[in-house]
Structure formats: structure tokens, C-alpha cells
Length: 404
Length: 148
Image (cartoon, rainbow over all chains, first blue to last red; front, side, top):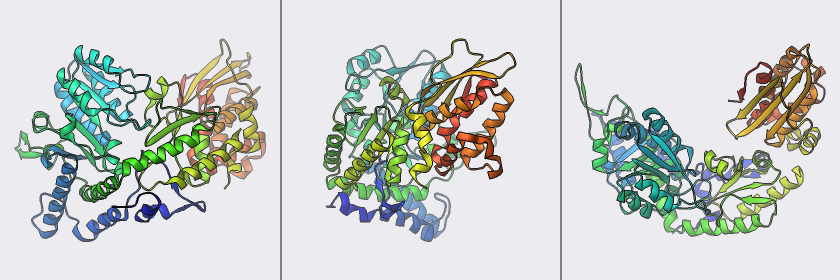
């Protein structure tokens, strides 16, 4: 068991950094998490001792690199309760969803089909679907939300019953922090034969997620939001679905044979991994998953909930602070301040070493729906503690007196 | 570098009580500027005299203190100028905001010199640039501008 909060910070070297002489207070974990020393060492170790291209060399280094890369696939697949051949490594959630839209979408979405996505989605699970619908002459349906900003199940069911090819939704919102019941929504979609794509970018960094239990067809995630390095992530889908999908990029690795005039594709996962993959990224991600496992086991969800409640109570005191979430937020807390722009707040907080996100957090349709131009978001993780919230609140008070 | 470099008292004053904010019915020039990174939008309305000099200018929109104050200061600085004079000024101020303007060129900037501090905050350069990009596009007769 690890002790979360302050005492975990020694594992994350960057948290020792001073920003303009002040302690770094990192509250932008929904954008990316900081990296534990073990993950950083794994990257260094790979390039110091193992570096070679995978799946082709017949020498010791290549053999080790391949074996470590494939063991990482096994580790990460197991983490999501899946099989290694069902896990495709990509650059992350965005690339995964684009791959699915371009490969599955190009083959199976036709004119007059409908693709559904709630308006609260991150642009990465929204724009790729708008793009493929535009290309195919299909209809992109932006689903309205309930008052509490969750998916309206009645409207969803009506839309599923009207016929749809795809339902794309997030397991956890990057703006509001609220979670959807993935299992129930996927069951509902299945009833109408609609394929589900779950954006797992946020949930994968905070909770255990069993793809098997959830019943979703596709699950996409980003390694860098789960203590892993940037540029590695992936998606998981069933044997049946993966074998029905064409490759999206051609090149080395993705073929089983190439003749002068023709080619045949390799089996999954290699069919979708043309070119040299991010080997070191996958290996470091596997280490990150080990640490995340331990952190979750040590009570990450309760820790984040406690901190969220603390921050919410402190923020609520300010009359001019308005929350985007209609429920008590958890994990990510987004708010705006009357007559004060989030960018001004972010700049002022930055002077005190406090890193928060200001803007629309890649969820413009949600902000438009709420009639909020931009918001401030603080998002929490294992190494955050009450002192981070206290420093944030103090700095915020300073910003108010400076600007108003 | 301090906050006061960015938020000079003149900027805070224009932010708290903006000048020339509003709309002009049937303007000679009109454009909408957009900063995709933050979602800020700014509208510029311009009326001209027969000789082409600016007789009235208004700006409208919501944005951060830097963007709004810059729009306010800008509208005060361009009245009674010709289109070419404004285009020259736009080039100069864009350089000033990025910290690329020679000291010898700063003498005639007047109040606009307060925008110099923005150059020390690279992530805020676009905020101060948006009004200038918007006015540039407006007087060139185009409709939409972007800081990207």
C-alpha cells in the first residue's frame, strides 16, 4: 500500500520543481499526469541498454526489444481485462478514435446512416465522427443532455431505435468529471445493434476498467493520462470486430505478404500497427500501469473524491464562482468567474506556481450548451493533497483582488 | 517579470471601463476575429469618411482582460487615421507585442506602449494580437480573421 497525497510526491521528480521560486502545484491532471521516477528510468534504460527495432532483427537486442514490447502489450491488455491480440497500440485516444472512424467507419458507415455522440464529448470523440459522416453523407447526431449533464437515456433510446451505426461516448467527462454507467449504456446500444465506442481517456487514469464487463465494442485510452509517457495509448476491440476491419495505414509490419501487384494484411494487432511502433512508450506504459495499479489499490478514488469535496466546499464560498457541473464534481472541477476571464486567472495563478487549465478543454459544444465561453478547470490525482487546494484558493483570492 | 508588466494600470483601466464598445449599424467595414485556442471572439465595426479616414470604430465581444483592454486602446488610437496608416500601425504593434520592435520605432506609439509587457508572457501574445488581426482584416474588406 502506498500513502497517497504529499508523501507520494517524492516518486514524481517534477513535483520538486520550483516555478518562479514557488512550489509547483500541479492541478491539470485531466490534461496529462506527471511521471513517476520508475517510468522515467524505464525510458532511459530502454535507450541505454535495449534499443533495436522490433519484430525483425535476429540479434539479441532485437529479440529483447520485441519481447519487452509484446510483454507490455500483455500487461496493458490484462489491465483492461482483455487479450494482447485485441490491444492495438496507437499514439493515444485521439489516434485510436480516428483509426476506428477511418477503418471501421469507411467500411461500414454509408449515406443515410446515423452516428450518435453526446454534445458533452471531447473533440477527439466528436470531430472524427463529424468528419466520417461528412465524407459518407451520413448524419451526425449530437445527443442532448439531462439537466445534470449526463446522457439522457430516453432520448438516447429513441435515437438508437430510429437506427444508428455508432454510439460514441466518454466513460468519464474531462470537463465535469462525472462518470456514465458504461455497462448500462452499452447494453442499451446492443439491444438495437449499435456499435459502441467508449472514450476511456479520463477513466483509464483513475479507475480499473474491465472491457469485458462493460460490454463495449471499442475502448480507447491514452497512456500519458495514466502516468505513462506521451505518444503511447491504444484501443481494444473484439477478435470479430478487428478481423472485419481493414488496415488504416499501409507499410511495414502490417502485411502478411506483398507481391509486385498486391498485398495481404497481417493479423491483428499488427494489421493496425504499420511502421516502427512506439516501443519505448509501450514498455514505459507497462511500468506506469504497475504503479497505477498500486495507486488505485491504495485508495485513489476515495483520495480524489475527498480532495474534490474539499475544493468544492472552498470554492463554493465565493459568490462569483459558478460551476459548470450541476452535481458535486469529482476529479475535475470546472468553473467560471463572473466578469473575469479564465485566461487572466490562469496567468495570475501561474505566478504562484499553480498549473490549472483555462479555456474550453476541447469541449466547445458543451461550453456553448452551457452558454459559457471558457472555464477554469482544476483536476486532481494521487499526488495532490489539501495543501494544493489551500494554495490554489489563496492564489485565487489574490487574483480576485487584483482584477476586480 | 511581474504581473504588473502584463496588467499595467492603463490596461486594467481599459478592461474595467472599456471605450468604444458596441456596434455600428451599417458599417463600412466589419469583421469577426477568432482565437481558436481559447474561443475568444471579437467583432470590429468601422465607419469611414468620404476620403477613407476612419470616422468611427466600435468593438464588441468577450475575452480576457488583455484582449478587451487591447481592443479598447486600439479603437482610441485609430480614429481619424487613414487605412494605410492603420495597416502600418498594425504591423508595428504586432511586432511590439511579440517583443520584436526596435526602440527607435517606439516613440510615436503613445499609450499603445503599454502592450509591450505582453511580450514577456508568450502564451498571452495571441490575446493582445486578436484585435489587431481583426481590424486588419476588416479594413482589407475580409470578413473573418484568426490568430492561428
